[in-house]
Image 1 (tube, rainbow, N blue to C red):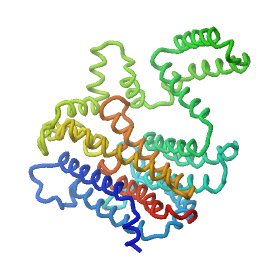
Image 2: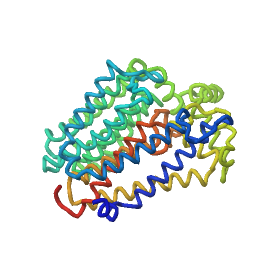
Image 3: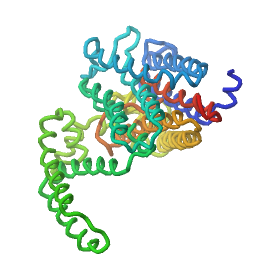
Image 4: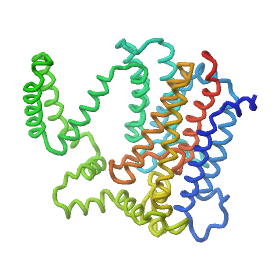
Length: 426
């Protein structure tokens, strides 16, 4: 059985996976290295624990590959239900770390059920979409698909862990791939844009901009495009009302740490000196991360030679900010290598998803792509300062046993499904 699997598995994806895990562990070792360390196999150290979970992940790969492909589709709903129960259990039995009750204390390690929920939600969504046999045009089907995504997200937000909750919304792109009208996506991006513009410039300037845009639109498009005035007026009112609610939500719903991050990201402080002070206090992690990457230059300072890494300048450098270690010790060459590896992996997974004969496999493949891509995009953007600090790990790279294990499971379930791509049904 394993002989056939070894012939059919996509080795390009496997090689990239192992490369990222190896490079990630090397940088975890560097970011946590002390002169008193005796062995890389000391499981009492952070890099030792990560090495242990690399071994556990490899065992998980063997188990995944040994199961029939039909197993994942058949029990996807059961897995989803179990993961939702595990999220609910956190409100009673959860362990609080860094202000978030997102973990179960299992002794040797802490288990984060939100990582499991990402896998099971991708499976459940693929199962539902493949079962309804439709192009997702019916409102009922759209609502049911969105509900599968929203349930885990709303269970995670109160922990509070908005970063992990945000990841689930990336699965909406799976629904778009299967036929959800782009109109909904446009609405979502429009409200995000309104939110950002309101914070940056205020409701008055937003209103003036809308009026100017509307006037110009009718001046140049009135002969070629007929737009009903009443729906346009209603839309205009909704936009203004939403804009007026932004400041209330920002000041009364968001926590102070979230407001500070948006203030830094959008440069809401006009005084350059105060802005720089904010960068060094509120945005300390990102500020130090940027400096570490800048100091690496083109070739980097060398393995275990990063002065900012050795000096613990960047908090949480082995987890969310691990990319800054790559930048300092391996320079532009190292960061470019990591980005290229991830880019090739994403392109390859898209190619694999598109060649699937089975609907469930294709939809799950796009779920995998969506989850990995949003983690990659937000983490790298956060580390280099172009996105606000959200706090989600870089897949296969950052320290964390739960993250590595479930990212591995997420990817290799799809690679297992791909080995059966020549068969139309499971």
